[in-house]
Amino acid sequence: MKKIKLLLFDFGDVFIDLDKSATLNVIKSRFPNFEMTDEINNWNNQYEIGAISTSQFISYFTNRFKLNDASFFKHAWNAIIKNVPEHRMTFLENLKNSKRFKVALLSNTNELHIEQVQKNMTPKKYQTFKASFDTFYLSHEIKLRKPNTEVFDFVLTNHPFEPEEIFYVDDTEEHILSAQKLGIKTWLLNPNKDDVTQLEDKLNALL
Image 1 (tube, rainbow, N blue to C red):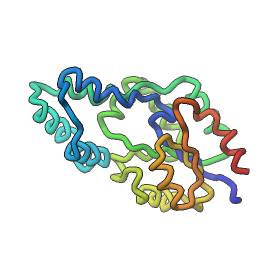
Image 2: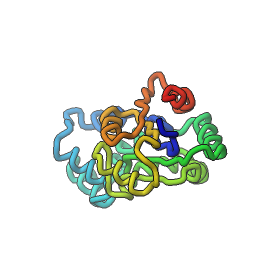
Image 3: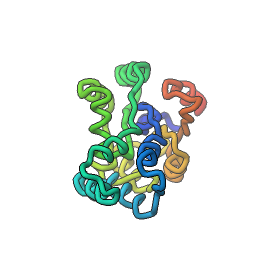
Image 4: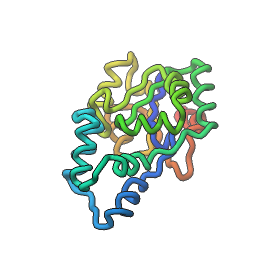
């Protein structure tokens, strides 16, 4: 088996803790009959790849909910975002300093969420986090999102590695399966029992 040369990480529930039910819970606290629709999912996905602007995205939902301003929606939308525990920051900095691998982030995220991440972490800590990666791919910046295999083709195009030289960590099975289709080595991390700091054990299991 070829040696792993690139570590590719998801962001949410791998490094940063998320409360994935929070946004819907906040919305339902004010609009108890709210239900997700295909149209709403499409707007969310389009926003996540930067196909629509933040102002367009906010306007859609403030109009849909008949809100006087955007504050409630922005609070609900960003309620999912928590923080990066200190032990993961230390792990990441140690990983960077070891120089054993190239390290990249590949995240489905959007402009509003990244703004909230910086507020929660503080801008300085966020920049330290970002600087720990050799490359930092956010879906709204690269215009691609998981689980589409095109996003992994994008990574392969931008890095001089074979698929089997890449080890990808994500907490979402459909993202992992897309990567596996291209021959990328993977770890489906379970946030309820796993932590990214167990990486060494997972790499040793490949040997």
